[in-house]
Length: 289
Image (cartoon, rainbow, N blue to C red; front, side):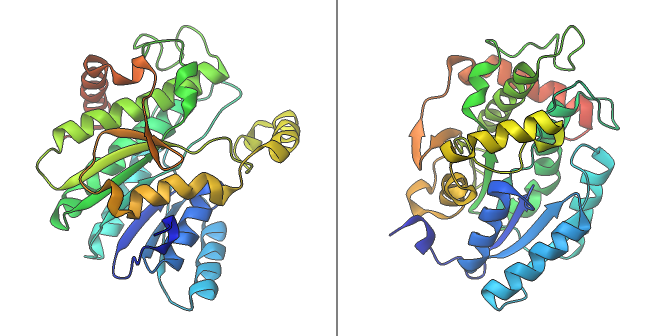
């Protein structure tokens, strides 16, 4: 059976960062496979356009929209509250929203933006929805990470998570992706026996709008790299596989690339760092299991 041959009829999937790139491709494909999709995005107009496209492709009213900035804890809580208020089940949470920032900026909550969106966004939204996922167990959480975690400069630098000492675009992004894998491992450990699996994946270099928020030079670079990049659907394939395939049923706390399990860098398997990151994240968000 191919990756996209799974029948997802009756399954509810939430996808964040879904109006561009692999998130958009993944949301469309999951809907075409029969899932109902909850689309989480920052821009209402783009979200509504995607809703309409999904309806046209599937001939079903199967996409709902939740608008908010995953760099804002207030918005994240509002998204989760709005979804829970629908009383819908939730079978899969696909955490995909992410940014890469050329310059150091901060979220409304004071976090360095790359870390605030890419890690805190995953952490808080997941913990707010985990009870709904558990109620429909077996359920799945899928986190978009990256082999860029190898650019973190070694173990997670807890003294520089907010770029207090220095800021480097690739170090900040790599650290946020390292945090995604550490979060995946620790969440999998804490959810053991509760019927929810948690896995992360590397999508490869995807030709998309990612990083184009960083100005003309970034747009030029991304366009130059496009011939050597994967299509958004190719980038989404492993994520969709983890959301749907029976081959990974019961497997948790792992890291995948090209629909196969891979070993991440050593710093991404440090369970002491994973636990410390978790405890700090609880303090930053007020959320816990």
